[in-house]
Image (cartoon, rainbow, N blue to C red; front, side):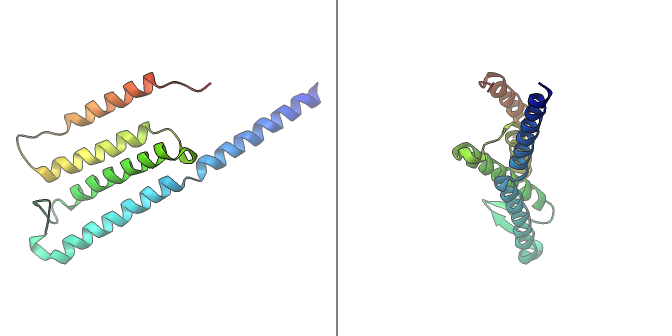
Length: 144
């Protein structure tokens, strides 16, 4: 019986190693973060190339003071695109709650800074997004 138990332990260890390898190789996550870095570089280049006046994107003047808002909004969009890829492609599925929350936070903070309207407060949307994400997590069927 100890021989059988030893084989079971070896099989479990092998399965755990395969699972760890699967999570370690994440081309979608690597691509998303690489695109975020590229986006940040492009945003800085746009602002630097435009000079002191900055650049206008969607009727918003982007300069040294709010380039980080543009980067955060773009990062939020890219993270959401990564979530969409994971939903559409079953080979790259993994838990999405953290990515949804992070993408939403980046997008709302970035967009809120770019809008710069005193009458529009977007930060409460972060709390709503976290709550909605939690609700989806509670009601999602669990695998056994």
